[in-house]
Image (cartoon, rainbow, N blue to C red):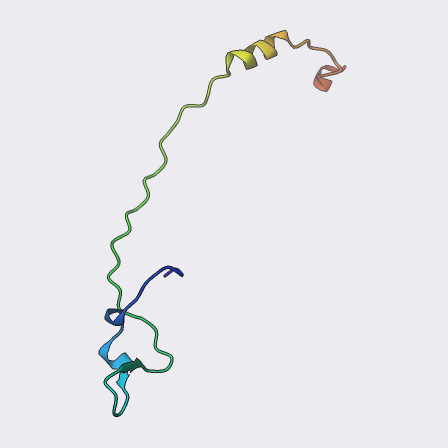
Length: 79
């Protein structure tokens, strides 16, 4: 239920109501909560599709080719 869920007498059992003496109005018994719901079935979520990894874009490929290799920007090459 959400704050926007609307309920009416159909969401309660007959035993949840009481009729006040000398009145034609029915009221709910204290502490009763709605218990009758006919929700539509929630469909299961589809599993994610298997996707191939993205190949590097042309800009990224050019950056990798044009980047100079030196000990300053690649400490693993320091001897």
